[in-house]
Amino acid sequence: ADDAALPMVTSTLDVLWKNTLDHWDDDKAHAAFLEFAAAKGELPEAAGRYREIKDAGGERSEMAAKKLSAIVTIAMPPI
Image (cartoon, rainbow, N blue to C red):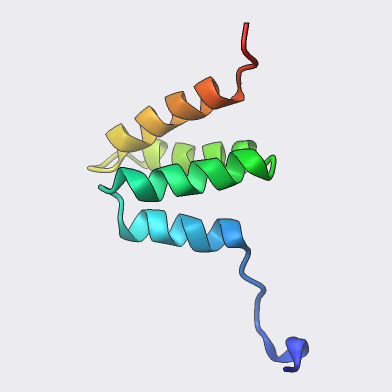
């Protein structure tokens, strides 16, 4: 395959985020996205994506706020 023909490389994080957006009410989709982000050191990127949705308001903002809180919990080192 000629990689130069691909218009854009889609990362696993992007694929998981699209799945999360497509299945917003499914906690498993959010969990898969956050687990991958945590494992790859991408929690700041994940937080930014949720923050955009929270700040936009609308029906998804409450879930986005909950997931931002979850990211803070995941990111905090154990005491």
